[in-house]
Amino acid sequence: MESERRDNAEEGIELPAPTSAPLYFALGLALLFAGLVTNEIVSAVGGAIAVLGAIGWWREMLPHQHEIAVPLQPEEQRARPVEPRAEGVERMVAGRDGHRLRLPLEYHPYQSGLKGGAIGGVAMAVVACAYGWIVQGSPWLPINLLAAMALPGVGAEGIEALEAFHLGTFLLAAGIHAVISLSVGLVYSTVLPMLPGHVLLWGGIVAPAVWSGVAWAALGLVNPELNEHVHWGWFVASQVAFGLVAGAVIARSERVQTLQSFPLASRAGIEAAGVSGPREEPE
Image: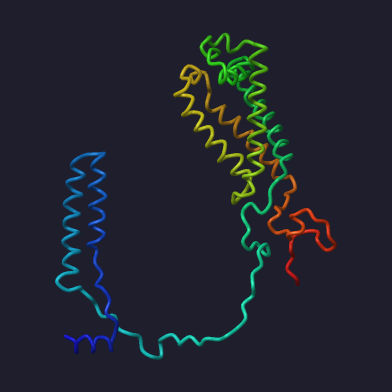
């Protein structure tokens, strides 16, 4: 036996023989546990597959491990040995060329977020009121529906009350709309620089689709009566209008670099000669 192994070692390398038994064993376990929440037949089939896989795996290992001999390549086809060479390595400096920096490297000013949120809020209000005017014949319906978020009794008064103008609900809806729009604008100015790809894709399509889905799922559970009066197609359109306008306004603003790449004196607010900005790699 030892002489055979030596001969094989000279001709090639012994490696464990390939087998699919572990895959069958894993598949059987997956079906076995999946049947706990589906059907007992799935568990029975999974148990049988797992047993067969375990037996096959066991036979591959005992009484002796199954191995195959992989022949070695000829000498002329083998890779050349690596020759060590002592050379200097360039030392990386924190802050230079993005080394050890945390995202975001740049951000939009908060003023641009507030501006984008305000203009986007106007665009969303225009689309929402257009829905009320075109579909329901009253621009006050979406306003009263927004106020019903804080006044649950408003949604139970009937469609006639929702289509009428009420000064109190109008002021409440305007306040809610302003706070939400400005808050989302601030979030946009902070988060959008960290996302890959185009700003309008994330801010105008992805984000509105996500929070529209959350609002649809939550409103059906929290206030089913109010949910019956919401036209979700127009709702999504108004959110997309907000996202596109707010994202476009914020994207056009000038980005501000974070202080990570600035020297310590600049980050500490010390005014000194030759300290005016981030480190630049010498040409």
